Amino acid sequence: MKKYLNSLKLTKNQKDNRFSKNNIDKILNDITEEIAMEAFSTPPPQPLVHAVMDKVKCTRESLFVGGRYMKLSRKLSQTPWFVNGQKKMETSVQDILCKQIVNYTRAESFKFLSSGREDIDVRTINIGRPFAIELINPKITIFSSETFRKLVVQINDSSELVKISSHLRILSPFDLKKLKEGENVKKKFYRALCFIKSSENSLSLEKINLIKNLKIKQKTPIRVLHRRPLASRDRTVHQLRARYLSHAEIREIQEKNPNKKFDYSIMGKFFIVDIKTQAGTYIKEFIHGDFERTKPNLCDLLGVDLDIVALDVTSINLHWP
Image 1 (cartoon, rainbow, N blue to C red):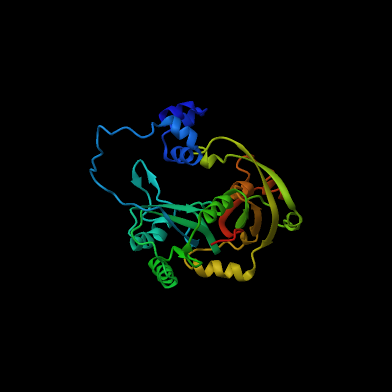
Image 2 (cartoon, rainbow, N blue to C red; image 1 turned 135 degrees about the horizontal axis):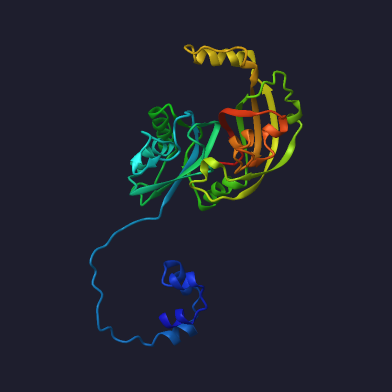
């Protein structure tokens, strides 16, 4: 076998991993009787050393469970946030979603997967974000529909910060491929609350409502440069729908913040924009421009200086689960 492996034309990476399980499986599938006869003596020689069994460990392949979740807090990270080994937040989306499922299956460990991710201060609402949990070496692998229903109830009752917004189900490899595809290929929908920073009092929003399939260029945002390489990305903003806050929405904000004093003279500077865009677009930077690192941006399109107050992910266009 070693002689046969040495005869193969392998890349450097393949040579480094030539005795990996995948390579051995491929060879065993491709090997012919002639090659086997040449590589091994027939009949095989009498072994001089006998194998000794030290211990046996039984494992099974990973099990994947998925659904959709809503993130209802603007003070919650998607995954545990550590700085210099110290956990910065008490919990996370991952912690809340995975705990009950991992405990039920008695999995050895797990991995949390999702179709993209939201910032700490961004909510995911409506139908929610697709996610999957890889359960590594689970002891329990059979789920009934009633079991899934109870797990959803337990997870939703455990926190007001995160809710499962769909049913749960077992996932296939094809499903996982779709989940990964959704990160960069599918369309996503957002709603942003924006503020006009300039002294402009009567700004028409109609001109941006006519925009379709706007091509933009985005350099890696300054806020993520410490963990992502500097690059320029082409993105498409498919549609924009902007409007000023209604009186009912202003009253709702007041009711939710009874101890705050409102300057009614600036309430007319707030507006809402619904954005349909290509996955992978940095929405905050599209709105305020990120020091001209995103071009064109919403400031350019409206001709005023803007900032973003709040952002929600309202839909991810992916058939899931």
